[in-house]
Amino acid sequence: MYQDPFNRGKNKIVLCETFKYNKKPTETSHRQSCLEAMQKAADQHPWFGIEQEYTILDQDNYPFGWPKNGFPGPQGPYYCGVGANKVFGRDIVEAHYRACLYAGIEICGTNAEVMASQWEYQVGPCEGITMADDLWVSRYILHRVAEDFGVNVSLDCKPMTGQWNGSALHTNFSTQAMREDNGIIEIEKAIEKLSKRHLKHIQAYDLRGGKDNERRLIGSLETSNINDYSAGVANRGCSIRIPRSVAEDRKGYFEDRRPAANADPYRVTELLVRTVCLDE
Image (cartoon, rainbow, N blue to C red):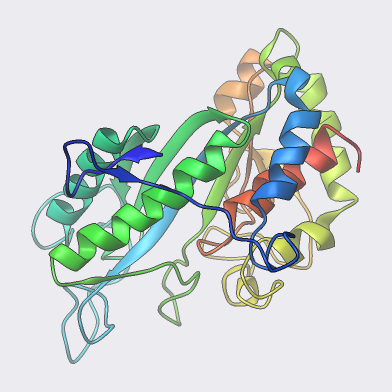
C-alpha cells in the first residue's frame, strides 16, 4: 500500500497481484515468481536502481512540444537541457516527482533525456521485491499526473523512427559482495554469467519477447546490438556498462542497458537474481 497523492488524507493506492480461478498467477502477473527468487537470494542482499525513460505525447500522440508539421532540431541540446526551446513538460515531471515522494516511493532523481520531450526518472536503491513494486506504482502515478495535464505518456522503446534515441529501463544491480572491497571480481563473474544467458534475458526484456527491442537495440544511438553481448567501462554502447567510478574503486554495481522502457520490472529483476545469484 502507498499513500495516495491524489486524494491524500487516509486514502491509499493498493498494488494487487492477480490470480486465475485456480489460484495460480495470471500469465501477465510475475510478482509471485519474482518474490520467490528474491527470498532465495535474500542473504546476498540484491540492490537495484532502475532508470525509467518515457516520452510525453500530446493528444494526437505526437511528441509534446514538437512542431506539428515537422521535427525539432537534431539531438544534442535536449539532454539535461534547460530553456523553453530545449525541454518540454518539466512541470509534468516535477509534479510526478512530488507525487511519488508523497506516496513513499524511493524515487531519487529526474532528467531530460536525449530526444526532445523524452524524460527519465530514477527509482532506488531498493532491495529485493521493493524495486519492482515501487516502479510499477510510479508508472501508475506518472500516467495519472499526465492525465491531469491533458497529455499522454508512452513507454514505447522507439516512439519515433529515425535518428532519435529510444527509451530504456536501464537497470543497475549489485549484491553485498559486489559492494565490498574488491567487489569488481564478483561483478566480472556476474558479467560472465550473463553472457551465457543473453537470449533468455533479451526475450524477457520487453513486452513482446524481444520484438520491441529489435527497434531500439541497433548498435547505435547509445545502444548495443540486440544479437551481440558486450560489456565495458563507461561505454553506453555495451549490453553491460561498468561505471567509471566502479572501475576505479573496484567495487559497486553494474548497469544492464538492455531492458526496454516497457519491460516488466518483476521479470527484469527476477532474471538478474536467478542468473547472477542463484545460477538458475
